[in-house]
Image (tube, rainbow, N blue to C red; front, top):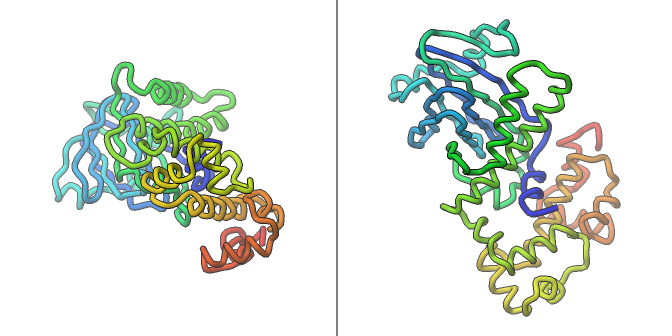
Amino acid sequence: MDVVSDAISAVRIGRPSSNRIRVGGSWCTRFAPYEGAGFHVVLEGSCWLLADGGAPVTLGPGDAVLLPHGTGHVIADTAVDAAAVAGAVPFERWRDSLDAGAAGGVSDVGTGREVAVLCGKYRLDRSRVHPLMAELPNVVHLPHRVGGHPELRSAIDLLGRELDAARPGSLLAVPSLLDLLLVYMVRSWMAEGTAGVWPAVLGDPVAAAALRALHADPAAPWTTERLAAAAGVSRPTLARRFTALVGRPPMAYLTWWRLTSAAALLRDTADPLSAVARRVGYGTAYALSHAFAREFGTTPGRYRAELRPDRA
């Protein structure tokens, strides 16, 4: 797997949820802070988004916005002031008040200018967030531009078509497209190159080569010398460039990633601890338990029991 895929997979749990809303007239609804990531895709029309502590953002047709840290926010038909924000209707109550009987789950309310928005959430495990995901801004606005981010545009178009009418297989297609949408939103943010350390990290040939090698086979018996050879540079060059860009030495990053991967396997699989240990590069279950307890402050068994009692 590549670094971006691993960074997303490490925190993604469950399936994404979404609601398609078509609304007209004057409206304002609030999304409470969420232990996950929120997103909106404007399929038709336009609206405004105001994140807690942020500046208002205008969303037009084809725009996508990701709130990767679950920041509370308001969306409305027009720019809102403090009084409007204070009076915003909680989204769940506002959604339930709409016409739930409309065809295809589309709700209509009000008159005048209409907007169709896909609103949704991704469930995330924030206990071991990869630094790539951690450095995403509170609001990632990806405006529609002709020729810009073609994969993201294609995913949005496909979602719109799937949601236009109930089609065979849509129960599988829509969640899969929503997962794809998350990947494309993160990828598009990185391609913008306007901020963030990790776009620079993955654009650096030495750091990127080392990260690809570690993520491709974290269980390998890596040393700094072996990793430097894989990246095609000397050991001092790798240590200097990797540490400067990533923020920790290569072997420290490897240990962190091995334990993060172990936590994800404990969360998502029923594999015995010995199998988890082998998959992430520890020779024995005891060795993994010792390192895991030092990092997490609990044993792998207790960690699994707290997250998945059925797999303890």
